[in-house]
Image 1 (cartoon, protein in one colour):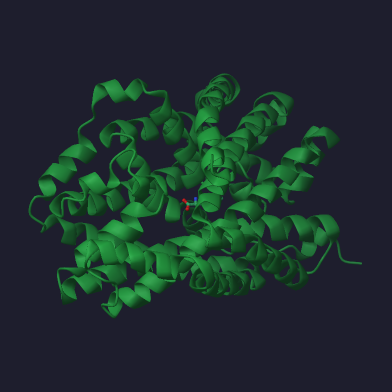
Image 2: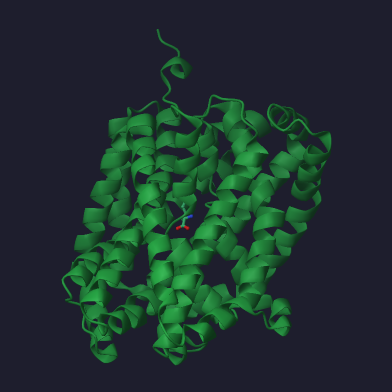
Length: 456
Ligand code: PHE
């Protein structure tokens, strides 16, 4: 009988792994979420706080996930039980739940990007702001949204069926360079807009008072988790297919900083547009469009650009193609968490695991296609709060329960004892208290979203 470990797939090159991990991190979060959260959170103040969270909590926790994945070579559900004992199985199951839950609504939004890319190139998105809202309601909800959600899920399932090397790695190697090219091209194009200077200023000059605002602090922390794919075992799963003994702290820093770079450059595209077309009021705090989380990217920007004629149509099309690439390379990592757990835990074949759970997720996404408040609530609860809960317990596991083993594994590539010490300090003493605080802060917002959902 062949041992499972002998036949387990793996990444073929380090670059393949890094690009796939960056592909997981760089997603709708960088473009759709980052720009609207940054706009709500006072622009530069938010960006600064965000960077702080990435550096102090994001990178150390990402390194922790990578360590656990590589040292166990199994799915997070089994890895956590193996390292921490049975009491840690629920954390692994929480990861799988987050994978199912996030992908279900993520795919609905990703479906919109397909529709907008096609209609953008065709110049079929109305350029009048009022009509653009109606257009969004027509294509972004109900059956049309279910349709594009189905297409997106089908593509995601197809890639995951191909496995690590032939599915995930190959996709990342092709799509990520294209994404970088499109992004840089769009940001350069945005420089040519007059009046964009005020946009850069808003984006880059912090209002210091806002740095201490608890709402902004929580949204920056939540955004860091979502954007870095942390707290639900996505990178843990990816690292479980890693054989080489690279320096995992360096890998984590590369992934996280590239992810930040992409979100930052996306902002250099979005903010000049907001100011050039004077869309500031539309995305302002308290505005219903901003609150329903889709405003900036899907309702205000496309018609504004569309008013520029053919060039504008091309830019809109290219922008949504880029969003689509970003989304699919993240979606496959969400599905892979679930699929790897089922393959390693129940010994199902990859085909069966991918099809059964891919279809289940597709069904779970239907409520989000019909009700945007449901989508917003799921995003807040799962994409924000539960990821931080997952991150908190990961920090406790790695920082306390298995610290010596984790440090040994880290030492495989990170040879400097001082750097390892710093990592341990951040995981043990900084991440847990900060995350507990942020979680407490995030309760009111969660309640507000829940009230909106049930209509009180
Ligand atoms: N990081 C992805 C994004 O920014 C979303 C994601 C979250 C992917 C969690 C995997 C795990 O869009």
